[in-house]
Amino acid sequence: MWLDLTNANPHWSYLEFTCSCPDEDQLASAYTGGWLAEWEFELPRSLGDTIDSYSAPGDDDYNHEAILSDPAWHTLVEAAERTRQQLLAAIVDTDERRSLLGTVAPDC
Image 1: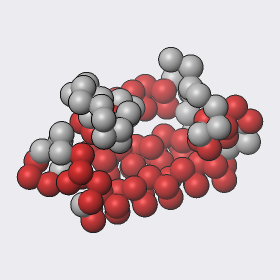
Image 2: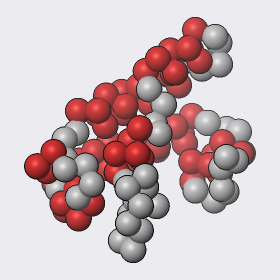
Image 3: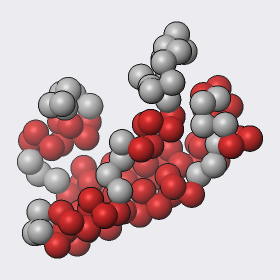
């Protein structure tokens, strides 16, 4: 939703998008609880570190145009795509693969 230029709701922003990503505490809890293998923990944790290290141009998390044209953002997108491809190479569950491929809407 934050990529929809007609959407002026500040709750659908880049900042809200990044806050919806699982944080390290959530991932660690799933890992120690036996829900994730080590590789399943490390891939999104590493990507989360990359997302957390990104700063929007001018520190304006609501300037979507500046973010989308920022070369550092494109580097982050490439890192996310590499992570997605690594997950796709390892995940065999049909529903999980569909989710990663964006062919099915997630349950909310």
